[in-house]
Length: 132
Image (cartoon, rainbow, N blue to C red):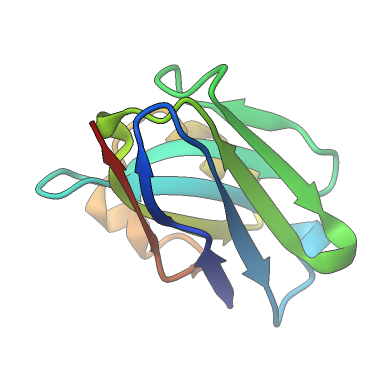
């Protein structure tokens, strides 16, 4: 399973570090993705990382502001979110899949609802609220 944490209320320009703790599966065999869903909007892929080789991916909207990293010893993936904007307000989810290409193709795009069921693991989300 996956557990996301670290969300909160911050002012525009602020930072947070989101964590995604994994358990119950072999962490190194999976790619981890970060997704977000703003109120009234569809879920979109924000970032991803391969646990095996550390390859990272970012949506254009967050490049240069968000950084994804992995601590394999702790089975945890982090998303450092800097220079936050009100439009970053959303519930942030982490997800894991054995197929790195699946994660990679979803970064920077809306996730079709039928794809939700194709993901091996979804974590419960953590809410990030950015005030202007």
